Image (cartoon, rainbow, N blue to C red; front, side, top):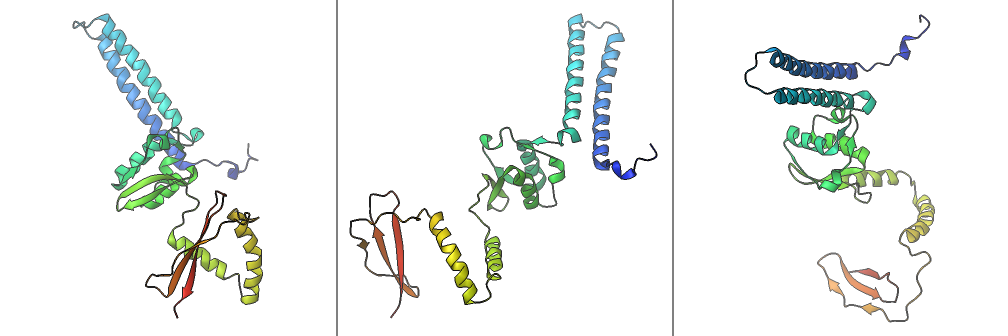
Length: 241
């Protein structure tokens, strides 16, 4: 035993404290129920029937079982998990906000280490709780949020600018940019399902008149029609004379 390194014991003092506190609560409540049962059992008969006493004993049994089950759920073996719907309700109460969600969105979803995911503000807390579930919230207005599935295509404005700034550091001059453009262009066509391009339609393109929009350019729209379900609409900007 002396050869065992102290570093091999990785006890979590917070988890131990929580377990002790939870067990103390369970034992205290169970003791109170037991004391009440014993007091009634040995008191004089005051008109209560035996069936009432049996009902009390049954209530005592199920109370202890339910308290023990709760204590078992809230421990490190079960990752201190809580139902997502309960965590969202707690967030609303603690931060005085409203979170809109439907029942199917939260059904059968659990949050591991739920209490440890709370932070000083609601935005960080929601991110910590929802990110592992591939979920997020959209802020509709101050104090009002709507639960959403993770939207891979939606970026915050500041995140978009940060990404563009990072891309700008990859090009030192026009030559390096042209080289990178040649690599990216085929990928763009594939992403748009335009590689290979659809067959050229036999119909004539529909060209509208020039429209002045008040900006530095005039726009003319050209529409191409074909049997293909993929329609193409492109705007051609022309500078002012």
